[in-house]
Length: 291
Image (cartoon, rainbow, N blue to C red; front, side):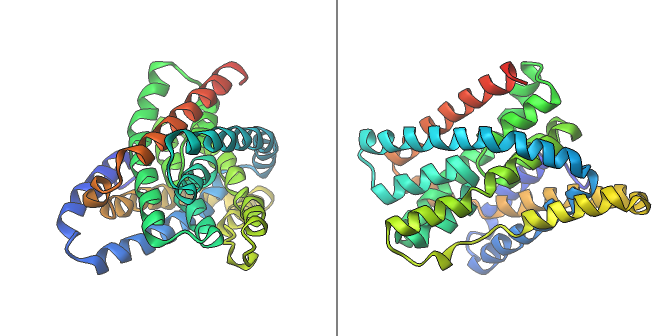
């Protein structure tokens, strides 16, 4: 691997201090981070047996559905308690429940959220994601979690796919496989939830962004499972995938904006932080007691 995921992220954040004056570079970093992430996820499918992917996905479908209901329920009351903007609270809840920035980007046009609200939501989620990559592996090691338990915990509790993969890749290869599969199952909830909100807000459901790379991941897993001659190339694809994740985290770090973090205000951040802590604790209890 080129460099470990956590160092890639930290180097990117350090680099953001120097490129903040160059918005074109920041925009390119955002674009390429998405491309590297999606390509790396697809290539990771080569390392996972298709039957395991299906089993983990089916097992993860129920718990991700329950997790989603709990988070949206807590979010509903949290928005009222903190008296924050309804659209901002909805985006933060969506990002916590499903898939971080991707879920926020998919839902924002459906509920008519403006650029400021979207920026604040993504900035908060990004900060918590950055903390996750650094904290989760340390906690997993401290509590002596199994690979499967950690992978499940990371997939249920961390917002963005990139951060789930970053944290789980630090913990271990088996954890990475479990986390990726469950996380992608969780990400698919973007579609029905966005459709539901599109009916509520009477907007066109064509604005939904379907995470097509999930199907690429499944296709690669299926191909490498049943065409055994391709196994000779598996290690190469896995190596490219892992390096791709490191590059992704570096590019994400480059987009970190300290000024935006100062402009957020305390209430939205506290709302999102408490929602995330509750999600993290409940997911931890599930992963350590039922797996």
